[in-house]
Image (cartoon, rainbow, N blue to C red; front, side, top):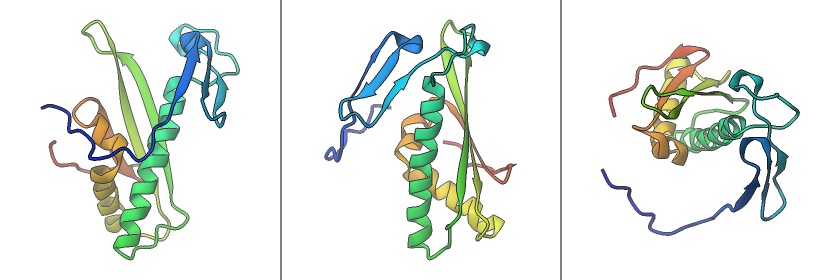
Length: 153
């Protein structure tokens, strides 16, 4: 299925990386300026820097929670004090490349389990990261560690 073009671009982030996974990255506006390190689990030296999987985990969780908060507001549900915890795993695909898998877990103390699960499913349809990864990587949604059954894509 071909990609759907945007009707208009609202914002474009621009960044430069030198040295790959063991290098340095920065955004052109200077708001992000990070050293990068290869985790020991991936054969690297560890180090004090972050890595692409951590950056993706934060980005996906932030985007997803924003989508969830928007859906909650529209449905007059109280998602205040909610948190999205994310895990991004990387590993071999078995076909010569590497792939990712993601788990997003919602903790929402002001919502029933049913409302929380419904918001997760609705946010998954709205979030640009979800839309970009759908059908490309496994994304597991859960509420307080309980996996939500998702319809087949």
